[in-house]
Length: 309
Length: 309
Image (spheres, rainbow over the protein chains, first blue to last red):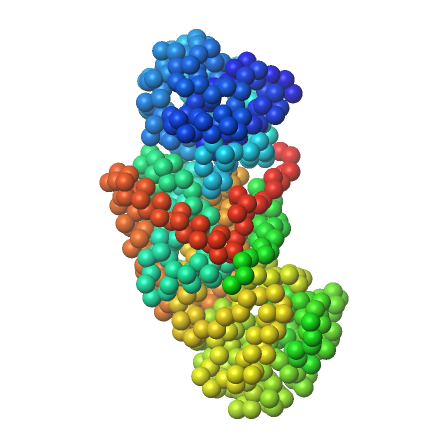
């Protein structure tokens, strides 16, 4: 594998940027990876663990002479970061992001950037429930989709070069309209996350069932929800605030479906329930066949030894 | 480990009964495990794979001289099975079940059984999304909770003996009132399952987003839901029909919470969202500390090689 960019700057040093840094450096896809984070503590941790080749103490230093700048901050912060780096970008550099929403990021970032840089928004569909500079690992993107949403006037060669980097980190690359991206992600990610947050919140609020029981007996379906609901609160707050219409649209559909099933339960309509569950089983099949998950039952979990009581 | 029951009869040969058979025979907890299933095909498969010591072609034969009879059929079938086996049970035998609801099973089964058997309902909180005689494995119950809901007049020694079997298969045993069981499980399992079914159903119905995209980009949170939604349709139809009140109660709470969050999104109330998500993250911590899940990010999944496109 060969060097794709001379110097890459990662702005924000959480799970995604950390994983990018490790992936890029492992595979030598750049000559230098520079990192910056707003908090001193994060910068110190990044230095301590050797996350990047260099960690700077200012945004301006980080992006100086960078050929690729990656905005890996919460989507609500993208606009301010773009405004601050704009005067320091090298002409001809590429700026990309890894935010979970696209249109709102474009609206905040594009007006801030000079005309002589290539802005190519992107979104890696990868992550875990952990956050921060220690959370990343170099294999995070393997076989995961990384969506690029180039703008109408994006330079094709700049887009191809970014796609090459994405592929070199192990991801599968696809291109999409920003608005369509936001709708697809509302279905596959944003609404499911909100629903998981809600289910866990319901369990938290119950008084007739003690929290300990909910936790203790949580192998029964609930724990899958809790993993999703442990995601970074800041990131998700910003996702929902910045993909409002599509999210509310999908939630509306969701509640319609839920009331339909709820009614079937109340009416004792077993046939409707059985038909519905049979159909949903088929979708799971489709996901395994598309190579997006493991066929091993229970996600291949192994029995934990557990604590003694 | 020593023999706990001389002869154990497993009625219904799906994931749970199959796993019990393998666990019991592996650890020599019985002298003989006899199996029966209603469908000829299941009985043939069970014989083919040597699931039990013996597979009978009738219910009466299966329970003859059995010291423990395990009802492992869908909860809607429990009453009929109980009626059919009642005349053939050995005096002093224990009858238990593994159904996901307890009160409805008690209401269906108890009136059918003679007075000289010990009826001790139970529920192992374990399972995968697979079904049928080939789905079981002997380690399914390790470190999982197995709840027993003895009746007021249950013989303590009979309960202790069943608890011993449960523990010997690796599970942690707890006792609980049947009604309370149904409420706890409505929270930790039944409502989450219905919600997962619904989310997958919503994705299935959408027209503006193609099904392929939903499947293709499903690593983004959706796939966790789909595993749950791939559960056995018959089992779940019966669970919802037989734990109606508690399930509807929890669903009502769920929709109240969901509308609260939905409103926060529509109003742009980032603080409320952030506070909510911060609280739900704490519950995930509690589950890992209770030893009920792995700390490995993303459930310890490894990257799949995936199919080439």
